[in-house]
Length: 127
Image 1 (cartoon, rainbow, N blue to C red):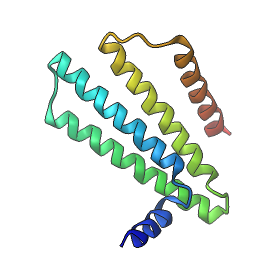
Image 2 (cartoon, rainbow, N blue to C red):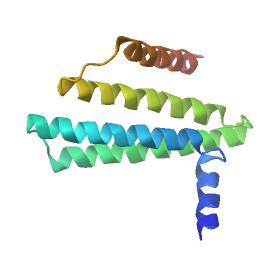
Image 3 (cartoon, one colour):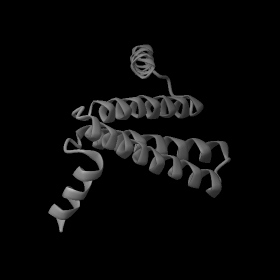
């Protein structure tokens, strides 16, 4: 059963799942900080939580789509990995924004590194 599940994941997302697992971790961090931030501000709503979860599911659909295009073009997951890195940077920025709402200081070098990642992703998507 486990082997069947892994084969399905490889078919949908590609054989290297490292980036995908990393993205999943970043998504969990964002969800946690979002939840805590909303509780602290007393603005938590089920509708907003549902929308955030649907966004995360849609991200996985987009990654699967990028993998399918890579497969058709024979690109060895170049587009898929670029897409995942874009979403990792995006999730990191959202997590940092939530942390600042909670009055947590963010190291400047960390902010600069994430901005650099986003700039690289924008440059690649414009090419």
